[in-house]
Length: 178
Image (cartoon, rainbow, N blue to C red):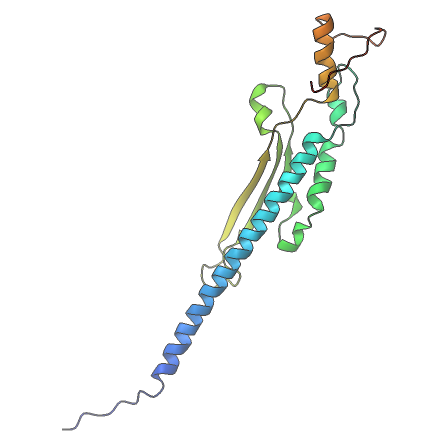
């Protein structure tokens, strides 16, 4: 008996299609990962710049006893700086951006700055990893320098041993660096 011949003429085409589809999927996965890295770096830079804007924004209101008045508009300026980078192009909403204001205790001093939380897809096509997303966080906690009003309070306390310096005093409060 002769063995029957099986036609194998299309075998290499099928193997090529499977290998090609797998190879292209891996290339797309690597390409999307590179885009995610670049987007992450851009978001981190925008968060850092917004944090720096928040930390140095001061309305130069040196009224003694009103430290909050010096920070009026600091968060708005930080948000404007963050929005200049137009991260919506990369599907990063500006709603994930937040500012951590200084608190009254020393425990929150190191967390003063800005943070952004955003999601990115792992796979652009959704064929290799499904619809999985990464939740990423970019933080820039630099600590806030004292405002001019806080400096005035410190200098007033250093000169008079109280924080109740009135405007009737014939003294100019000045400190280079506080």
